[in-house]
Amino acid sequence: MAPGGGICKDVIESCGAFSEYDMATSSAELRGSPLRKAATGLGGNLGATSTNDVHELLECPVCLNLMYPPIYQCPNGHTVCSICKARVLNSCPTCRNELGNIRCLALEKVAESLELPCGYQILGCNDIFPYYSKLKHEKNCRYRPYSCPYAGAECSVTGDIPYLVMHLKNDHKVDMHDGCTFNHRYVKSNPSEVENATWMLTVFNCFGRQFCLHFEAFQIGMAPVYMAFLRFMGDEDEARQFSYSLEVGGYGRKVIWQGVPRSIRDGHRKVRDSQDGLIIQRNLALFFSGGGRQELKLKVAGRIWKEQ
Image (cartoon, rainbow, N blue to C red):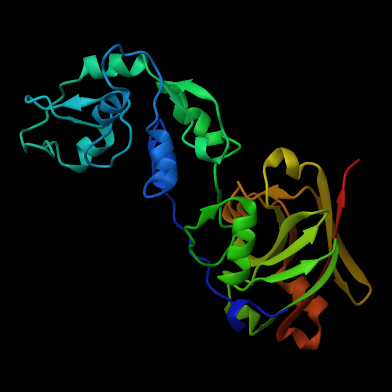
């Protein structure tokens, strides 16, 4: 099997900074989607005060995320979240007065009295949570959308599993196969010139579920290696119901690896860096490939089975 697009693509990774409350996690997924409407249907008992009005008060005017302590206010009473306070260089985004370090304790207290539905209510989660517990739940909510498992290019698409399967097929043009056994050949000319690369993702339909086969080149320390691993399109508890094996070999030698597929909740970079898969040093992979070690022609055989 040739690499995606006929060539290997350099793996480009980026790391994001998260606040203590993981504020960006839910809002980035909900903004501009029907989920945002679900998130505004607040519960709680605030007397004659509209909970929607309170929701608007708790929304940061800069990032539009819900605010969590410490909530800051300017002398005119305009509020901003702690993360955006640094972004706006301590200048009130509403009136441009200096923010200082004045806490809006009243608004923080009001937030404690609220109970909110999960932000993924529209996707099936009907649980209600105290304001300060909501985001902790949403970080691990089983109804939260999955991220696209495609590796080798940044993709911000999220959705449920059927949607992502169609997205992978139609937008990324990945190979789709039915069956629980497979044989794939990974080819690359001049492999010594490629230190970090990823091949086209392959998806297997097995036991009515979907599994993603990854193959990447990278370095462990100074040693160039290839790594093959499987990710399950579903949650971790479901992934543990399955096992898989991978095998490479040639010229009377063989390397076999067996493990449990990782959930696509874990990014491919996280799985790769944890070395949770079949790892072959470049020299051994080229030995298996034959041809004077000038070209990578590595056959990876595998099997997926369900644990009893």
